[in-house]
Each structure stands twice: as C-alpha cells, then as structure tokens.
Length: 174
Image 1 (tube, rainbow, N blue to C red):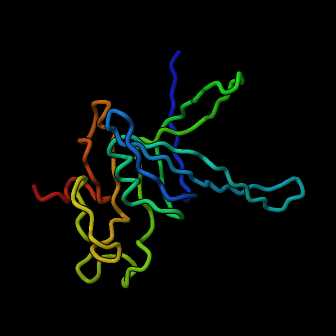
Image 2 (cartoon, one colour):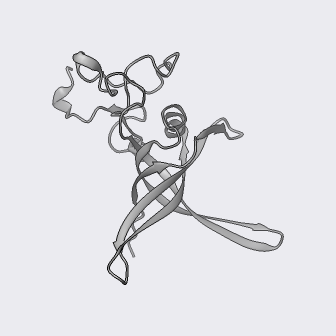
C-alpha cells in the first residue's frame, strides 16, 4: 500500500531557536510553531484555536533557521511527521513532531526604515546560503522574502544551498 507523509504549516514561532550540533557535527535546531485556526462553535460563534507544533530542522536548514528566525517570526514550513518514542522510569512516552524540509521566511524585517523592502533600488538579491552574516541586525538588506529549499537531498530539484527570491528561472541572467 502506498503512503504519503507531507505537512504544510503556516504560523508564528513561539521561541527563539537554539542552534546546536550533535556529536558528529551536524547542526540541529528545534522551534515551536503556533498555528491558529478559526471555526464556528455549536452556538454559531467563532472559536479561535491554537495548535502548538514542535519542528526540527537539520543540517543547512537548521543553520538558516538559527540565523534568520526569531520569536514571533511568521513562517511557512513544509516537512513530514515523525513519531518519537522513548521510555522513562519504566513508562513509554511518545511525541509527534514535524521534521522540517523546507522553510519560507514571511513578512519584513522589523525596524527597517523602509519596511524592509530594499529601498529605491528594489528588492535586494537573495543572500546565498553560507555567506557571512551581517555585522548588526539593523545593517544590510532584508532577506525576509528569501526561500530556502532543501528538497534536493532526495535527488531532485535544486542544490542543497539553493535560495529562491520567488521569481522564475527567466530572472536569472545566466
């Protein structure tokens, strides 16, 4: 029987991510995401409901999240569900989490004088993954529109350090 495991979430980060490294040197970042939904209750009134989801990013995704994501940041995440199980004090525990495979930074950088839009020159070129970080958060261009896609790990699509500015391939001058 075929199976499919894909999650797409849009929400706000609940805590600042902490970039860690596992024993073999692989970066990992865990974030919390608050996803809001609204539905009509039994009495016809709107009821707001928030679901809190733990998301784990690995490798370059973890570094990107650690560098650009802060508490309150709006994000879109694509990933897959993973059930973690462990035993503590003789009791079996489990937790459903999301392993993030793609991250899209939404919104503009707060505190930018022009709203984070890049000024009169138009939007800035996207920052290539692995480029050095700006010296202060208030200097440099806004990368809130940058999309990082790590889907190439399974052999398809763009390279692991590919960054998209939301345009088409026709925008690329080479």
